[in-house]
Amino acid sequence: METRTASPSIETIIKDPARHYRAPCDVVADTRLSRGEKRRVLESWALDAQLIAVADEENMAGPQRPELREVKLALLELERGR
Image (cartoon, rainbow, N blue to C red; front, top):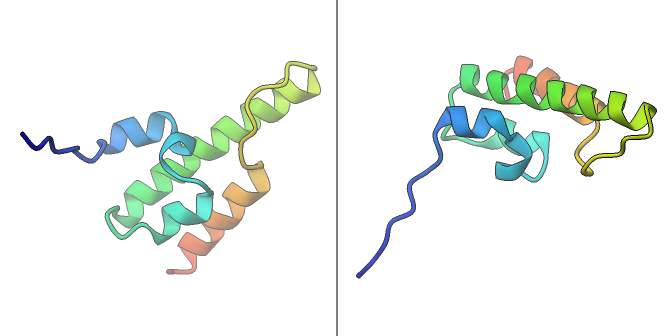
């Protein structure tokens, strides 16, 4: 019996973008998402990066994730219409 793996919902992706993409630029390149969905995913990723940066500053290191700069660059790329 063959099992099919359904694509995760946009809400699932938004909850943990790093689980579904290796890098923020991969979100921009994903043809399955609309421009608005990409923005939502990247904004969620930016918030995660900000929270991790704050935790790092307070010596509460978390998982290694892309830095906020990478996410901001991906958002700029999305705005440029790529």
